[in-house]
Image (tube, rainbow, N blue to C red; front, side, top):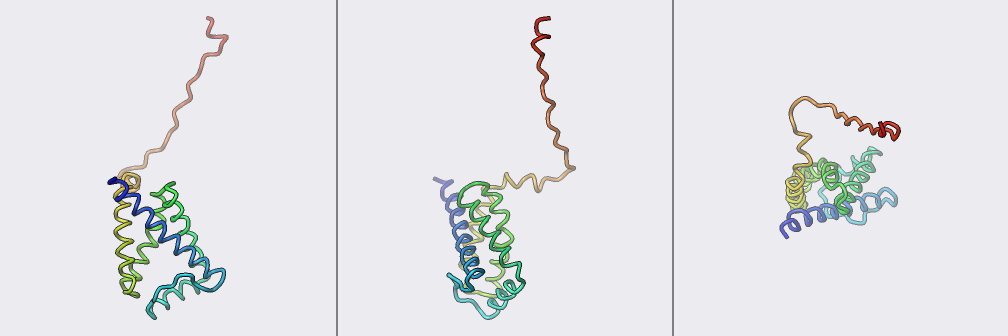
Length: 153
């Protein structure tokens, strides 16, 4: 039950938030209209317009969001999903803190869910933060079996 509340619920919540954001972003890319567009400050709208005006960044961000959301929702490589979504989560949190304070509750939810999942998947990220020299990975030599002709000797 503890795993359900500390891992499964945050994983599904983050997955659904980013899936909704990706679907809304693709809606804008293909139709020019948003499905979901909460109230945004003027500075927030300027920032969003700048991302869209680059021509490449908005679609890239939405593709990353959908990949991360699918990883989290399907529970296939959820640590990878969290890793690819973390930079976007950081931008969303900073966006709401500095440019659009109406979204601070969403930022709080992202931080809490992200922290719970980071703690749950910490062992999967341990190798990234391990200090020391890299050791080459060497596959063990295959075992040689005696041929049937040699077995009778």
